[in-house]
Image 1 (cartoon, rainbow, N blue to C red):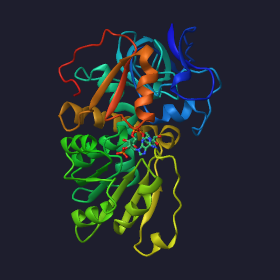
Image 2 (image 1 turned 45 degrees about the vertical axis):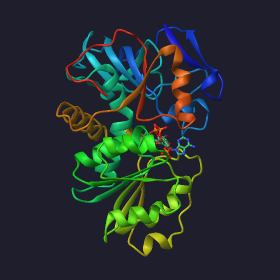
Image 3 (image 1 turned 180 degrees about the vertical axis):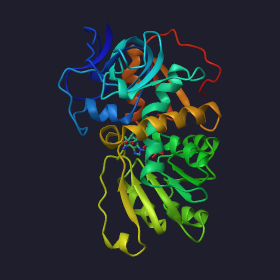
Image 4 (image 1 turned 135 degrees about the horizontal axis):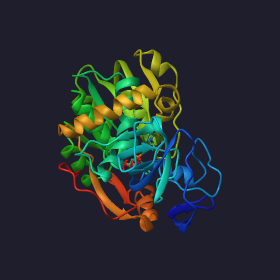
Length: 335
Ligand SMILES: NC(=O)c1ccc[n+]([C@@H]2O[C@H](COP(=O)([O-])OP(=O)(O)OC[C@H]3O[C@@H](n4cnc5c(N)ncnc54)[C@H](OP(=O)(O)O)[C@@H]3O)[C@@H](O)[C@H]2O)c1
C-alpha cells in the first residue's frame, strides 16, 4: 500500500511516499481503508522527534483515519464496508490503518470522510478541554488564543455552542476574519501590544472565565492577566515553541487555576468520555452547531505541503489529506 513514511527525525520534507506492507490488526483492532486524515500540529512534533512519545523509525504519521472498515473482529459491532473514523497513535497517512475497536466510531450518514477527519483529533481534544477540564458554563467568557488554527477555531465554535461569550485572538486579519465567521463575539490582534487591555475591556468587570491556549510563548503572560476571580487557564499546546513559566502568586491572588488538557489522558483513563464526546460532536454537526472549516485539501503525496502550512503558520482552520480520491457525498459537507 502507499504511505507517507518518516524515516529520520526532521521536517516535512523528509517524508517520502513509499510502498509498504499493509498493517496487521491485533485481535482487538479493526483495519480501515483510509479515505482522509487531517493534518495536526502534533504530526510536526512527532516527525521531529520532539513529541511526548517517539514511535520507532520508520513510521507513518497521521492521527486519525476516516474511511471504511476492511476487517473487524467478531463481536466488535463493526463490519467490512462500515463508514468510520478512528483516533490513532499514528498511521493515518496511508491507504490502510489499524485502530482499536474502542477508538473507532461509526459515522452518521451526513458526515463525510474529510469532515470526520477534521472533526476528530482537533474537535474531540477541544471539546474535552472545555467540557471536562475547564468546565465551561453557559454565559461565561471564553478567551481563545490562536483562534484560527485547528483546535483554536474548534474552540471558538464549541465555545459558542456551549453558550459562552467568545473572545478570539489571532495574528493576522484573515485569521481574525475566519474566527469572526466561526462565531467569535469579539476578535483582537495578538500583533498589537495592548491586546490584553482590549480583551479585558471586552470581557467586562468579571474578566475572562476560561482561557483556551494552544499557543503558549509570549501570549501566555498577558492572557493569564485577563483571568478574573476563579478563572481557569487551560494549556493545550505550545505552538509558539516556548514553554511559559508561572509565578505562583499570580494564581493565588485571584484564586485562579492553570490546568493541562491532553487527549492522551482521556484515551488512557476515560474512554467513555471520548465516545460520549464523539457522539455529541456528530449530533452538533448534524444540527449545524459546529462546522469544521476545511481550507485546504491535498492528495496523499502532498502531505508534506500540508504540514508545511502549519509549520510556517500559514494554515487556517483544518488541512485535510485525501488518501483516496473517491470521497463520498453526504448531505452536509464542511466549508
Ligand atoms: N492537548 C491536546 O489534547 C491537543 C490536541 C490537539 C492539538 N494540541 C496542540 O495544540 C497546538 C495547536 O495545534 P493545531 O493542530 O491547532 O495547530 P495549528 O492549526 O497550526 O494552529 C496553531 C496556531 O498557533 C499559532 N502560532 C503561534 N506561533 C506559532 C508558530 N511559531 N508556529 C505555528 N503556529 C503558531 C497560530 O496562530 P496565530 O498566527 O494567530 O498566532 C496557529 O493558528 C499544538 O501545540 C498541538 O500539539 C493539543
